[in-house]
Image 1 (spheres, rainbow, N blue to C red):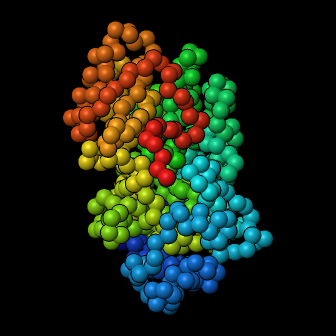
Image 2 (image 1 turned 135 degrees about the vertical axis):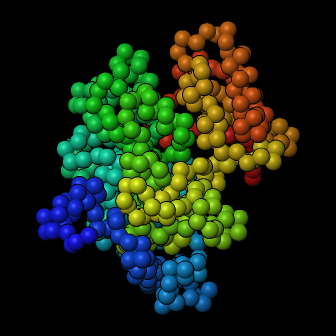
Image 3 (image 1 turned 180 degrees about the vertical axis):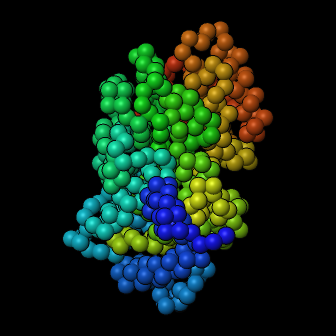
Length: 449
């Protein structure tokens, strides 16, 4: 075949620009991507070594200097960072910039101890907005779309992360945050929102309130949902898509690394593209800490490559997943993070069986006469941990069926998850609704110490 004409070359370039927000970065050959990562990894290690005393102490204890990082494989030489490091160094001990050089601070709620505090320079915020815009574009959002943002605003990174990403994309943001769900339903319909940003559980709460109001959100403008901040199953995706009439896309992030936009599904819905020009992804055996081959399930570890204020070296996310570099039909070359199946710290060990709440969810959601609202109740009887399950019935379910529903659920949990449970069937609305991250586990075991 002959060389492309200038017109054909221009046409193909134009098609690429329409398919990708950042075409050059998103379709970079993997060899070039690795070269870019290595240079940025070396800069990040130098930044952390020079400016974060804890990192310098740990590297020196291992006999390491920044110059020792000569390949991407050398990342395995670096020590891990864990969430307790941020709490132990509260508030600013892991920052590589003094507070007066920052543009913003975010923090966790601190419900299980001291809050984890994260900081951003102006350049960090620009990077975050770009990556969230890239993520939204990959999911199908476009300039001019009305984006209904029901992620919580404030110290939680979800709301402002989605907000500035949508603005960077050129979308029209409705900064509604969580709560006032009845009003949210009206705004979605009146403003003809095309994109919904929320946690999966709150998206279902919106759908439920709409149904109670006699409003069918499927007849409105919603076409795309960007859902994250909590693990959710394929069954939950189907439920959300059925009730809201949109394409439910998975977006991933965590405050310690950046916030939402670390990775996102493209329209193929076949794994989340992790943006490797800004992050280095590994999967390790959570017990040994050793790297696992591509495709094996383990704990996701992330190293930031461009963060200035809070460089993170080998941050253990506790999220369980698999990675693949197999080509995606969308044309993006970045690694895909396959669906998060759970978190190490969410895992329950019930009579020797490892159980994640998402496994229970996959059994419950979509079963006849059951609403997609549930809680696991963990108690200790003697020396054993016991899990019981509370589920809601769908509206209009005859109370005489509750016993049969409980037996059906218990049977399928036993056959598919491998544990025996006591199932309590509750009336609609009995389980508290969340305006942010859903509370899936009520742990009634006595606290130690």
